[in-house]
Every structure is written in C-alpha cells, then in structure tokens.
Image (cartoon, helix red, strand yellow):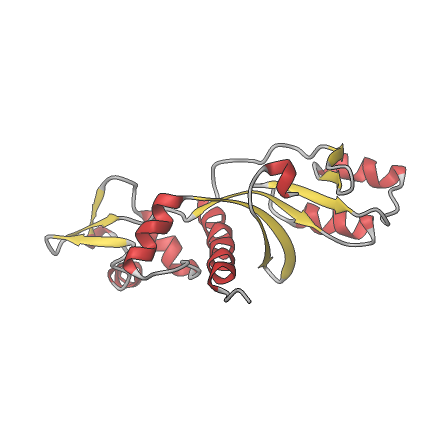
Amino acid sequence: MAAVYDLPVLHTPIDGVELLAAFELDSTEHERRRGLGVGAVDCLSLLHGLWLLPAGGTVSLSSIPEVKATALMAAPSHARIIDDYAIERTYVPAGVIHAVGFLGRNVEQAIHRAARFTPIVERVVLLDPDSELRAVSAREAREWGVGLLDTASGEFVVRGLAPVTGVPAVYRWWIAELAYAQLVQESAQPVS
C-alpha cells in the first residue's frame, strides 16, 4: 500500500477496527507541536470546539457555548485567547489520511468492513496472494466504491471511488490525529 500511495502506512485502530492508513504528515505542524511538547489531539469534544473557530480569524468568546469555550481555553497550544474576549484557532491537523486499507482472508467480509467506513478517504481491501477473489467480490467492491489492491503486484484489481471531501471535517481531523498518534508512538520506539 505504501508503494501505491507513496506515503507512510500506519497500523491504526479506528472505531475498534484495525486498519492501515496512508498518512501524509504536515511537517510544519509536527515541528510546531514538538516545540510545544504536545502530541495528537484525540479528544472529539476539543476537535468540535476547534471546528467552531475559522482558520485565520478570531471569534468572540461570548459567542461560543461555555462548555466549548472552557475546553478551548484549556488547550492553549491549539487556541489562543486575545485580549480576554476573543479566541483564535492555532490548531492545524497533523496531517491527512488519503486511504485506509482493510486486511482479511475473507474478501467479502473485508469489503463489507471497508464499505461501512466513511468514504471521506479512499477505501481499499488488500488482497494477499492467498486471497480467493471471486467475480461477486469484484462486483460488490465496485458497487460500494471500494478498491481491491493485489499486494503481490501492487496493481488495483478494482479501483475505489475518489473520497468525498468537505464535511465532516471533525471526523477527518480525528482519524488523522489517530494516525499521527501512531506515527509519533512508532518514531519514539527505541531501536535495538
């Protein structure tokens, strides 16, 4: 999968499903966070609060629900208070997930898992050499917009549909933050 997307591929559990994520790191944001000593933002309520704030603008604190304002004020590395009455988002997603890959010997089950994943990224079932691909599998994959990638050749048997971009950005941010957490964890592992 890494060769197809030319991106690092991370084992990332999302919503209880173990999958692979082709992740493009925002190196500027990564360095900013390293400098501040902060990692991934995996709190959905904080991400929802950050989503209220426009990039590059300020919002009056009084116009934000109190619970959201409290969460934002507790996260100075991602939102900045200006003159005690306004708030500005400094948060930038740590990166972008371009595709998610699903593994499994049973191709139909893997297609069904991929189909249930939100189409905000390309969804791909990874076929290993022992996978038994039947015509019904390819038909179902096309119907659901799920790609089938032959891992031996690196070629698509079925190309998935392009992801749906736009909203929900909070979920897109959240899954990218989960992948970022995995990247940071993997890079912090001691090498023996």
